[in-house]
Each structure stands twice: as structure tokens, then as C-alpha cells.
Image 1 (spheres, rainbow over the protein chains, first blue to last red):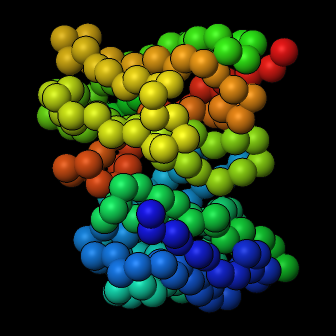
Image 2: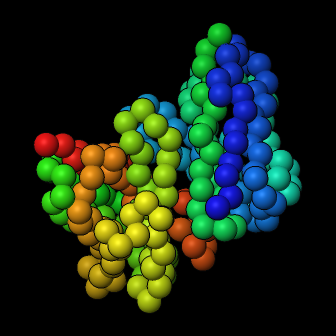
Length: 107
Length: 119
């Protein structure tokens, strides 16, 4: 099973700042099978990024994904108030696993 | 627009069974693989099971294999999860989700349905 590790566990930032979230896999993941989701309390997850770097429908361009192999990054260029949430990476190259999440909260 | 609506959750005792349903609309249901994903209270996301677009293939997480069965009725645009021998650790919100392509990536999610296993 591919284990995903996300860091940091919590990221405390102010609106307008840049957020950089990391996702590391225990084995290489094909970029086509790495995705990022946003989840707010009481809501289902929302797909942000698929294929490591492609934005899903309706996702603002302040969200971007990058990386390959075992190291992937989600970047939010300028945090908007609605961006404070939990973020999960997920791989589907070998079964389906999620990382433990990074909480982006307001500093 | 794509809609997925789960139903069938509730509070049940350990060792009993429950069947969840997920009604799909707004897309051609029979063209897409479908997943169940769960989230225990205050915890992260855990993939549970996936079924191919035509129901011919099913895959399960180790934690539920042999106890849960995923199925679908394409004539009714409905996905199911039969859960047997339920345990306290199965307590979670269960989401159905559509696979964007093939089996990978969950592009649309239902609102989720809570399942509580408690004596």
C-alpha cells in the first residue's frame, strides 16, 4: 500500500499570504494518479487538482499543483477567506489512499 | 448538474447489517465507475470500495473486504453498499463519489450519510 504523508499538519497563515502544502508518497506515484481535495467542516471533499497539476472545473487559478515521483505540492498563491479549510492529497496509482490532511487556518 | 444523494444510514448495533444507497442524476450513470469513501468522526478520508461502470469489477479496502459489498443498478441510476457484520470502527460518514475517468480521481461527491455502530 502506498502511504501518503502530508506536511505540515497545520498551516497558520493570514489572508493574502501564500500557502505551500506538501504530500510525500512512500513509493513513486504516476503523476496522472495524484489529486488534491479541499474539505470544509460539514461538507464533502471537493476536487481541486488532478493529474498532479490540472485544475478541476471551476477551481480558481490561485490553486496550483506540481511535483512528480514521491513529492507533490499544492500551492495557494494568495489565500482568500474561503480557502481556510482541510486539504487532502490522494493517489490512485495503486489502490486508493489519502494523506492525513493539512489544515490551513487563520493566523 | 451532477447530483449524488446518499440514504440508508442510521444507528445500528454491532454485528448487524445496513444497506446504503446513492441516487445519481445529472450525468450518464452507466458510463462511470463509482466509489464509496468514509470518514470517521474527526478523522481523515478512507477509501472503501469501487465498482466498474458496468458492475463487472469490484475492489475493496482490506478493512471491509468480506463484510461489505458494493453493487449498482444502472437502470435505476443507483449505487449500493451492503454492510454486514458491522463493527464500532465502521462508524463514519459514508460518501459516494464518481470516478472522473477509469477508476481514478473522485470528481463529484455526495453530501454523505452518517452510520453509527453502537450498542
